[in-house]
Image (cartoon, rainbow, N blue to C red; front, side, top):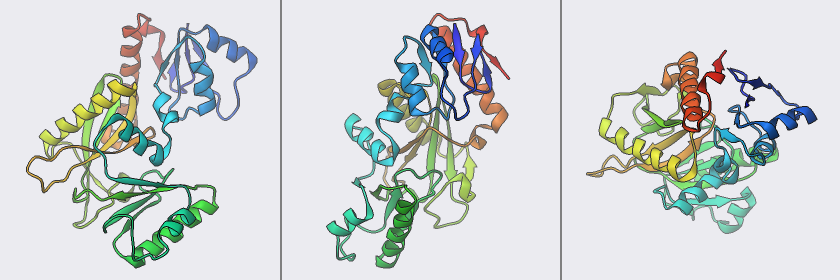
Length: 285
């Protein structure tokens, strides 16, 4: 039996939980399932409940919950020996202030980034160029902390000129495109900040990023995520540097919402087929 918690993918049994906990009957179904399809917004509690069963799970979220946030991902890249910017992890603003009471003494050479641990689409990302921008960044991080979003990293800026390569892992397939700045000098580049999507620029670098994303998937089991890379473009042979892994990512670079779900549907069917299960049991709705 194939069980789906995804609202857009029907299976032998489909359960749409919303924000409630599974019932006793739904827990029984999890225990009997051969495969479970999880929603992209899967909670850690639901994942752990399903992981305790003998069912195959898609997507694989073990790494997502083992290495949460930007703090966790920097540890993931370190543990796997993958190229990533020099990153220092901070629990609270007061920890940073204790280590650097004189704000003229920074942990990294300017310019560098300060990034809230749980920020998304550049929310909570601040470029520090001087003491003034550092004070502003710390004040913003303090406000996030008071709202319950504690923790941040300081991170060396890779001279990528604002160009970020997104490699989307969907099952066994990798799709790449660039997020490029619309304005010269723009160093924080996301689609939410009006970045340009470019699928043609620097195809050789796209291939390098895709290969590293494939390696990450092979070593961790990650099979649904958007992996961001930057390159030091002034170097003669730029190599991909892991920036972050996004388990929630926009669909525009994949051709929009409808195309995203078509690609996801194919990835799920391929995944079922590889495990000797019937891909016809799943329907896109």
